[in-house]
Image (cartoon, rainbow, N blue to C red; front, top):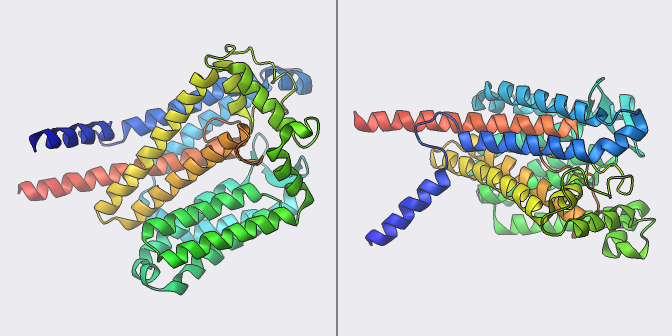
Length: 394
């Protein structure tokens, strides 16, 4: 019995990582910073040929990414100052603001590679889809907190969150952006599972999502070509399989230890815009399997911390904090999983960035805001636990 208690104690210490005496999650913060720095190095290396050809400046994208990193740290600090109760209070306004941003896309949006998804803000092309993910997570966390018993007991209670998701998803599909729509669906499904929705609700929701996904793929020729191209990329290596074949060759060249920083061949205009969606392929080529494994472990630990913060919040009966943290954890995990799966040829090519690593101001800044939210939730949980401990001592 004592042996089992020692194992549990060691496990608790390992999973805590951050000493109990601190008022913030130091492990989460440093995981966030390390991933940002890895992304800055990788983007600098991957973008040099592309920057030189387009702008005659090898560090054009590196400079912009450095600015995004600084803005991300500032955004994280600002979101850290906002209490979780304020996010809960503002959930409807945040959702409405997200809808307004998506409505502005057809009017003032900037088109890139045939997709109109960005609003130009000078140095930054802001992508409202990234903000929509945060807006949905915040809205659902508030809704599930207020309707907790209803969602767990009534079959029809699923329709309101589904309609909210479909509103945002509908605007995203007009851009078109199926990848972000799928992320919204996964966030909602994961949060419903945590809330404890009835199994028939959950199964029905997954079935509905699968049917809609197949329908959207079959009714758009470019999506169907992208899907079939991922199944047999080398069948058309200069057409639908061009990006994926070059991505796979990058991983193949990297093998275990990689070719070394700066020694990628695929970034020399073989893999288009390698610093964005296919940044993991360049990391794989230059740092090999070991480099990919390190990045995946770092992101996995970050997701673990998010889920742990969510679990602790629910144990403290702080449902909004718990649902919000868990929703953010699902979001980060799924987006990273899809990006890496896409680069490895396990999933169809989608325009989703690898969290905190890929080039893209909107993605990095919004993701940094979510890290600030997680740090704030953890801080509030620590203060609450400290207060409860003092009451017990008294």
